[in-house]
Structures are given as structure tokens and as C-alpha cells.
Image 1 (cartoon, rainbow, N blue to C red):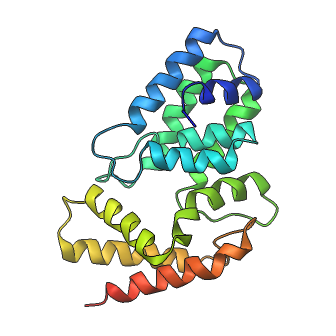
Image 2 (spheres, rainbow, N blue to C red):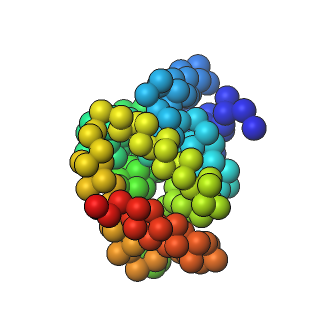
Image 3 (tube, rainbow, N blue to C red):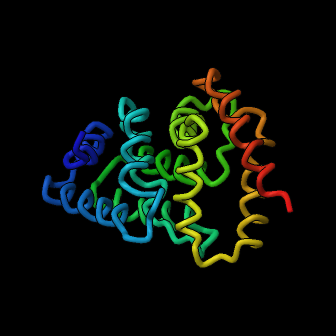
Length: 200
């Protein structure tokens, strides 16, 4: 399903009152950001996959558009920088303030994917963002290879250390999936299997 028009539709459904030309311009900027050449995994394919699970909720969809809008593998502040970018973009779109605040909360939530039990919208976005972890092992390996390509500047030893820390932080979550508990076992098996490959 083409991405063109989908940000605009979600923004309107969430209460945006800006001119159509403004919404079009914001959407074009976001698509350009998600199309940056250094993105091997965090690209339009990932965005579309997350949208497929979140688009029924316009605010969650706006957060999907924003959650990796800034993606610099050399930075550890991408979620915060993405939230700040979305703050400006959504102000241009003239969305209601509660929509703006909730969207930014959701973008920041993806930094660690820790979701409270009563946070349905947070669970919706986090579940969608982590769905890649449930791929059959060859597909999971392809995902890892794509992420490794984004970190090509990192030496192998430092990659192993950093990646292991990410995997362990996910395994330490009480639940990876709130709305799709049937995904949990496969995802945890993949994470544990990858973590074992990173041992010296």
C-alpha cells in the first residue's frame, strides 16, 4: 500500500486543521527522512510494517511516522530528537495539544519499549515496532544484518557488546508484547539465540 497520503489522513483523523498543502509538505519531509540512504532497516519498509498495525488509531499512526523520523546510528538520542522534530511538524499541522502531547509520549516510549499494563496505545505501537522479532530465524537474521549494516562504522567487538546489551534489555522486559502475547515465545527464542551468538 503506497505511503503517499497516509500521514495526511491520520493527521486529519487526529484533528489537524492546517491546510492540505501544509500536511502534504510535512508528509513529504517525513518520507524523505525515512528514505535516507544510510537506513538499511529503519526505512520505509519498517515504517509501513508499523503503520499496518497502528493505522486504525490515528494518534498511534502519527507516532509511528515519528518514532524513527531521526535515525542516526552514531547517536543515542534518536527518540528524543525524533520527538522534538515531531513537535514542530505537528504544530505546523495544527493538531490539538492533547494529540501532540500523546504522540510525543509514544515516540519517546520506543526508546525502551517499556509499556504499562493499562497503556493500550503504547502497547499498540510497541507491539508493532517489535513485531520483526518474531520472524522465522532466516528472516530474523536478515533483520539483524540490516541493523548491522547501519552500524558499519562500529568495530565488531563493540558491536557485539552494544548489541548484547540491547538484546538483554529486551529480554529483561516483563513482556515484549501486550496485545499479541502469542508472539512472545518466538521473539524471546530469537533474542536468546542471537545473544548466544555474540558470546566471545
